[in-house]
Amino acid sequence: MVSKNEMMRFLRCSRDNRGLMASLRCLLKESQRFRGWQYIAHLDGIGCIQAETVAGLYALHPMEIDDENYNFGDACRGLAATRRTDKESPDSPFDKRFRRLLSCSSGHELCAHLPDVVRGLKSADVPVNYSGLFDDIAKWGDLVRERWAIHYWSYKKEESDVSD
Image 1 (tube, rainbow, N blue to C red):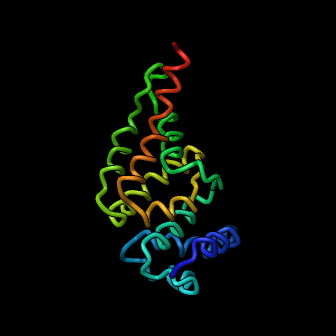
Image 2 (image 1 turned 90 degrees about the horizontal axis):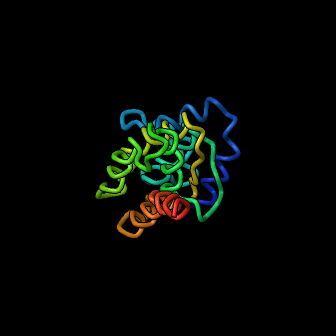
């Protein structure tokens, strides 16, 4: 069984090792996953979708936030704010992509869509709570979807409260 805490400690200690990070990014490509296995084998991470995905995503974008109240919905909200073309409108071109994440029927399907979103987060300098994401992938279902949606769309409520 993969220990999330050991995984996160390993990733944080390895973040400056460019070669290792390059190998871990291979975990995000089905045909190259084996290149990262040697680094996560000692954590029992081989074949564990959340371990492989989080390790690969962390290697892609190691800017993290360690706040249990901040989830991937918050990160996506931060990205959406940078993509909004009309600053007066609460809608963002990213909304459709976020809804696509929420429509994923399994953790495996979700993990296939996460790398592109994390690349966007990297380009916008938006941090990710990887520890929380690890748990959310493992527990993917309606409760996680609802929590992400609340955090993502809460800015619309906050903005309407301010304008009243």
